[in-house]
Image 1 (cartoon, rainbow, N blue to C red):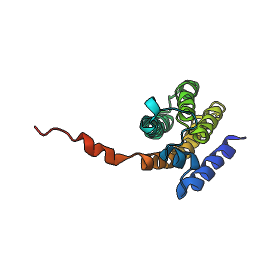
Image 2 (image 1 turned 135 degrees about the horizontal axis):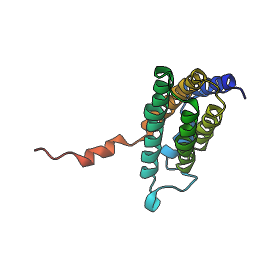
Image 3 (image 1 turned 180 degrees about the vertical axis):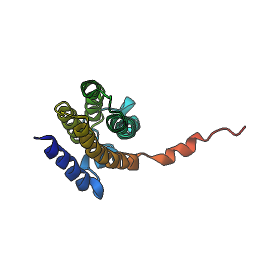
Length: 158
């Protein structure tokens, strides 16, 4: 697939999950964890890790890569590609670990395509498409996080 075809794929995947929760995230929210991750038979930690990985992929990694690629003409494409392979490639594997294998495939697709980009502009365009998809993925993972549990951990008033 060309870079433009992968960008189109990310846009298509984003539209697909815009109003419909991905099945693997719905399953995780119900405690269906095919990878068996989670300490002592529980899956809350798996959801917490999935949320953290989705948030940092979108809010830190992809956003940061875009800012560097677009705002710094002296940025080095090869260095960015090596960072993407190392850090975001690890994130892809971690998505699989927390029982989100379809999300992992999309992140691996991003990594493989980023390695083939020939300009900073091309990398930025790819990263924008991946960010748009990753933001929506993060919203769905955030949706299954049992936020009400936080009521059991109120701060002590000074």
